[in-house]
Length: 151
Image 1 (cartoon, rainbow, N blue to C red):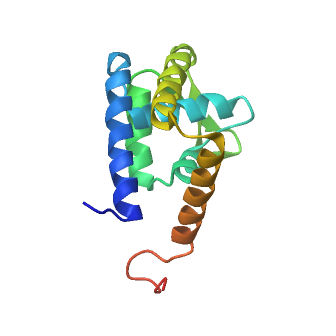
Image 2: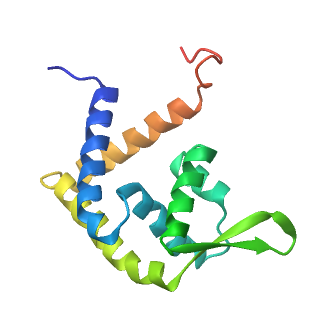
């Protein structure tokens, strides 16, 4: 079967998701939850992280981000703390449990990346990353369905 770019991206996405979910099942979180948690832990050292930052970093809708963050909160991996200047804004603060888990999460992600990129030269990988970034940029330039045509 001949696939287009979208078909390949979809296939790879599902394979990466299944692999990460299986690797992290013992931790009680999914691959996507682990990536969000890793992002929060790594970036909270640089400054406060908020839900809108997670939405932007992963291209998530508000409701999807809320669901992921609620699950991480339920698992005791993060807490939402009110910001003194704005009562509506809640800072995402990783717990000690999250800090400990991040090493395992990082190892799982690195193993998946290594498996996925085996046999691919650094040059080929760089081209792929540049092309994927450009495809993402192209899609961001388009209005959502029902908006202006991207053609």
